Amino acid sequence: MLQYDSPLGVHCDSQPLKSASSGRDQADVSPYTPTSAAPYLEKIGSDFIKAINERDLYPASPAWADHCDPDFKADHDCPVRKKKIVMNLEEWLRTKRDMIAGDCPEYRIEIPEQNTTIYQKEGAAEVFLVIKSFGLIEGVVAQDVGVFEFKYGSGRWMAIKYRGLRGLNDGLSVYGDPEQGGA
Image (tube, rainbow, N blue to C red):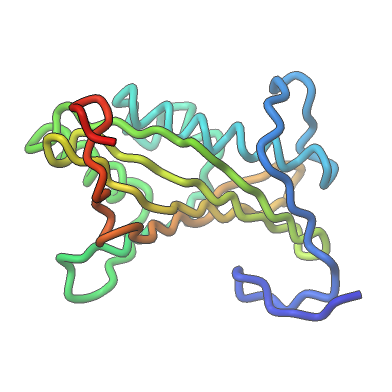
């Protein structure tokens, strides 16, 4: 048995389970066992991204209300900020709405890869997303990593936090947008 500190800040005495996205349908997975929780949580993460792409950016909508804890927090490692800003769900979604309505109406996200780590004893999990953002700057693909943290309680998994981490070159791909003739 390994002892380590999980990224959730909880001391662990168990081996974490890791699972790459399995491609199984939602009907085939259960949120209640560690081996089936990973694809279930990855489906929730994919549903969050789908909601962003479909402009479903209101906390009361099912995509968010059904899977986000009332105390959900989000922060993003942004190169233009002087300090870290932590937002609740309403504030985070509002920043997305404002960005899309303002300078980035073509904004969309693709998730080429997900990976989940489950901390069994703590009833916690992290879903890591490789994120490609299009439409922020014309012809440029922003590449980041996003992490949704989940806790299991009262018979269900709830997202408690989102962390956005800058990727290559402060999040901007040196390759450009492949749809615009980039690599």
